[in-house]
Amino acid sequence: MGRGKIVIRRIDNSTSRQVTFSKRRNGLLKKAKELAILCDAEVGVIIFSSTGKLYEFASTSMRSVIERYNKMKEEQHHPLNPHSEVKFWQREVASLRQQLHYLQESHRKLLGEELFGLSVNDLEHLENQLEVSLKGVRIKKEQVLTDEIKELHQKGNLLHQENIELYKKVNLIHQENIQLQKKVREQEHRNEADRSIHITHVISNVNDLRGPINLQLSQPQTQKNEAPANLMKLGLKLH
Image 1 (cartoon, rainbow, N blue to C red):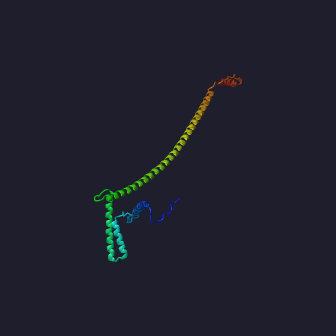
Image 2 (tube, rainbow, N blue to C red):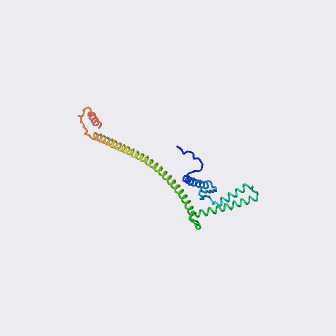
Image 3 (cartoon, rainbow, N blue to C red):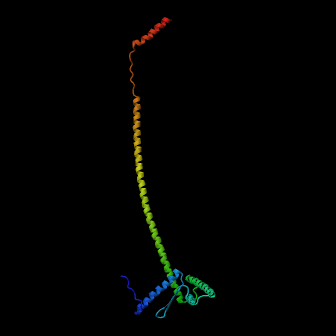
């Protein structure tokens, strides 16, 4: 269940009133500081507790804020003529110069310089400002480091997945190489077997050609030898 609506009225219990005052005072001062930083506004807050204790916050200096407030109130009641307008802008320039001087002085104090003349309360206030600023810096630093670690973790996961895919591809190529080498060896064996069969066949044919030749002599026929004899007789008669 959500919190019930708080009735805005005076808190009767003194302890509860003091606790509420402390919480809301800190919240108000924090919001005033954030408004000044985020919106570049000149903010001044003055708080008096029920016991008469003073609490204040000023984005520049409380005196500058009050003086500017009084000038603005006065100008709202008295419209500016040209002469008054010139004086107004002169005062604005002087006020801006004063604000710049105050900011430069505050910056040097935050750096730990020119701390002479500060009271214990001033030093405690400066210390609180530094602690708040340091806390904000540390929070921002932790956030940046966390984001970088998260990003590196994501990149690591992506690289791990890419390595797994590359390992699968390399393993597949290795298996294909093994199959290819196996096919090449089988083809070589078949070629060697074919060459052996061919050589054996050639040698067999050569041996068949070199086998023994059987010759048979037949008896001379008389009819065929009569012609030369007759020719010899004719030759003798011619002579």
